[in-house]
Length: 103
Ligand SMILES: [Zn+2]
Image (cartoon, rainbow, N blue to C red):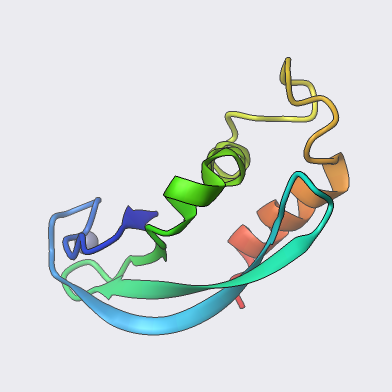
């Protein structure tokens, strides 16, 4: 995951080129969902594909963005204290499935 206008590879520092776009659904605390478009960038040096987390998520959606990142990085599980009921386990499984099988 890379942020904003960061255009160097977090792995090797190589240059990133635009690769494609993927849609992610963000479930907000109000039980509504939002579709967001995330750019994927490919490193021209090592070939790694990184998702760019849009900056706009942070000012307004920090809570959700932090949770999504925590789940994807394995920091938050259904057993994590404080996150027992948000998001639900099925949502976490779906995020992880999407991570291992990119659209
Ligand atoms: Zn790289």
